[in-house]
Image (cartoon, rainbow, N blue to C red; front, side, top):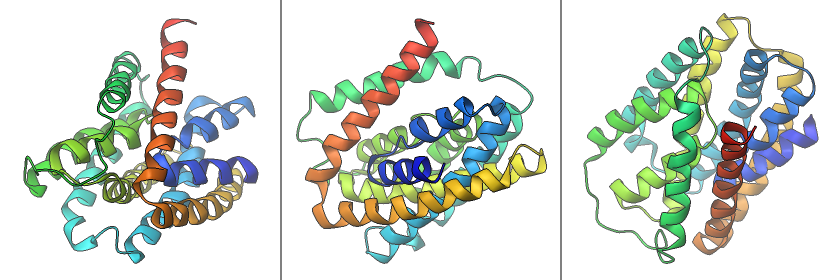
Length: 243
């Protein structure tokens, strides 16, 4: 579980999609789905905090621009985690594979997209209100691909480059992880011993991954990001429509 956490934290801090590694491992270990979700959220909170801290310390993210987004994302994620404990993922299970496919093919056919900052389309307050609540809810409710959707939304609507978008995504990931984790803990859906072991691995992985990103920049992020979007998309398509 420590090795799984390390790998998930490394991948997630670079391009998102670490849950594609950690959540199946918990399910394969025999944990019931809701407990697997809660325990995975406990471990991933360590990784997302480490990545967010590293990106902030490295100057990639300015926290004074993020507080309203953190609040909205936390509210959305807590709501999603509360709802998912009483129902299945429902329509989101069928919607998200299409959204991720759109992200993948959009970036595939726009090869220069995300390499430099572009025009900002909406102000930060409105962006955080809309996407904080919606993507926060999705992350707390279901989860796979949330980081990819965050990054794409930031690129499209705030016009940031991929490095800055990745840093901002990690801050929002931490907000949603922490808020939904509180709800899972209250609901008794967390095995702390397993989550802590995975969390320590996530800290190590996120430390290395965020360091690589800040050192190597956009040219390093983009192929990893595209690969992870494709893998998450393929897994969800297979699990949703072909099983």
